[in-house]
Image (cartoon, rainbow, N blue to C red):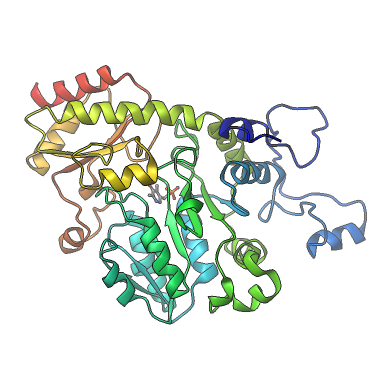
Length: 411
Ligand SMILES: *Cc1c(COP(=O)(O)O)cnc(C)c1O
């Protein structure tokens, strides 16, 4: 068959079994458990000899269909859907981490990920090593025989720093460690993680995929490209399952024991969201670029940060990795924290809310919210400035958004 488009693959992903009523939208199988004809069939399902569903903490037809669609559009060999982006990240770490092991990463991380690594995992004897991922020598030095992952966000939030993925992937290959990347800020339609050597991709599907802020969810994508015989905890499984060792452990042990599987209602909403994701993204990201250009002309804004702007220091790298529209989120600096608050309070259209890539435009002051519980010193080390505002651009007309920003700055 000829290569078909992203949308065609997405929309025409077949069901695992024909639907009894030929439903065009995957029904919500709102059932905790599934019945068996015989004890033998039940045994086979529990031992993994058949693919029948047993219990919805482990698999569910509606969630599985969502996972299958994500596989169809990304080429991942294993996809696991969980009930938040944080569940996706923590389950990955549970699958590959061990006491005495360490994660090499940047201090430019989503606030809860930073806290997971620094606080939660520390109690289990896992060390986090923060370094400047732009400095390859420093990254190499941090990796040792106890490193079990290099973790990064492809465009950090709110600093909007872009790491050179191919370069870091080659360092990971040398070091025998997997490259684990959070790609939440750029959707599958424009960024192909596998082409840049990312072994395990994690995504908060709460954002672009859900669209319209319908639900919280997370995805783990395994591209089957890492040699798990190099992993201290997965080496025994790699003997039997080869490149699938990670996903086998994830599906048969980790996510079952952690109990954070996606629910069928959420999978239904996110399957619908996925159908329109690339259309919404094109509109939101084009508006974001245009808005960034217009905002640069306003004298009360000290700086506008969007890696799709030609004078951005990451413009070239960002364009190579993510194309001309690197996400629908920008940040900008005003004179002070007070100026930020006064500006935000005067907005009439843009919503004061957390979350990203909703259909509505959302604004937040990261230093006092997402990063509010960190010390001033920690915020400085994370480059989270009290002068910075983050804007997630929605589906409104650019004119409406620009007018709202102007009236809030100058009224
Ligand atoms: C939102 C977000 C997360 C966490 O996802 P949840 O679905 O809220 O748990 C992780 N990483 C990034 C980059 C995010 O924007």
